[in-house]
Image (cartoon, rainbow, N blue to C red; front, top):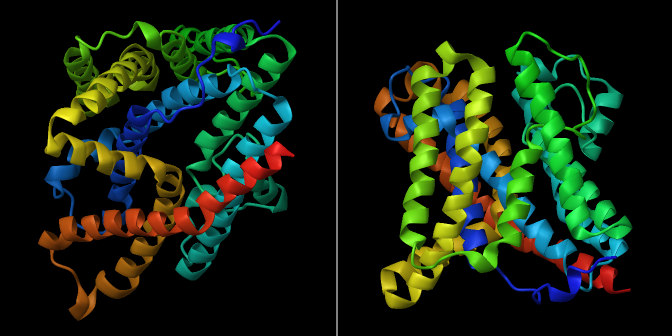
Amino acid sequence: MNDQRAAAPPATKYQYIQMARAIAALVVVFHHGQMVLIRFPEGLFLPFYYFFGTGQYGVHIFFVISGFIISHVVSSASFSLRPYLIKRGLRIYPLYMLCTVVYGLVYLLHRQMPPSKLGYDFEYLIKSMLLMPQWRAPMLDPGWTLEHEVIFYLVMGLGTALFSFRAAVWLLALSAVVGVVREVVLPLFGMIPAVFDYHLTSHLNCYFVLGCALYLTKERWSKKSGPWHLLGGLALLALMAYAKLNHGKAWGHLVMRALELCLLGPGAALLIIGLQWLTDRARLGRSARGLVAALTRLGDISYSVYLVHFIWVAIFQYVHRVYFAAGRWALPAWAADIYFLLFVAASIGSAFVVYHVMERPLIGLAQRLARR
């Protein structure tokens, strides 16, 4: 029934995938960095302007990466549903729950809860902690992406256990097509179905499907065209950023959503293939090896970066509002970029500590429990 598993490669660490994770994490951190500068005058921060407007696209890269990695996991000959759920659960939930609690405590100190969090109740908090899909974002805002991740994990795990890996991919592809029709095509014609299906069908599943397709075709990637893949991926991502910044408001979110599907997914896929070439190329030069090593290390801690950095958003907003926004301690306009870079450094530095203190031990615990 699971005929594809016998041919699956042994477990390996895809270094270029870690590099892609690092890039996606940096893009998201830079995007949210605009929130720590909200009290500075507009028109500054020119070196980071393009990340502020389009940095959320790092999430789409993460989705493609997840499709690739989970395909590697569930297509393995040793795949079993119980260990799979244990590893995925311990990988996602403990650190996310801890960061949610810390984030909430920071905002209690902040005393300026975002409007989207006002009026929350116990049910909202529980659903936020468990990553149960809701109409609005969970308490820790980056958790909305993890809601989609959890649904994807369940579809791929259950689909592979009950049928086969390829059947699970086809099931996911069907849900993606339904999501595109419901969330992109019909609204373009003025038909907006008021249906909330808990992310079971979503246009975002297209990115997971693309990651699965990347995994299925990885043996056919041409190393000779690696530089062109890398440049092509960067070009598509840059083109999407340009469209969003210069035409996003005029074209509307539906057109931009359709354009994202056409540019972001293929751009992320080409980027990943190009990074594989760069990883191989690293053997030829010290500078290339250094870049690959740094990005790989950052990719290792990318999940911690993704969660922890949003806590620092709240902290830096609080510090600026209370200590620097007015009076003799007011920061000059030219200090905005310095303040921003301090936020990035704090996010990555603390994530490194969190990874070694909590995330890596949890990964080890999950592996031990899965073997029982």
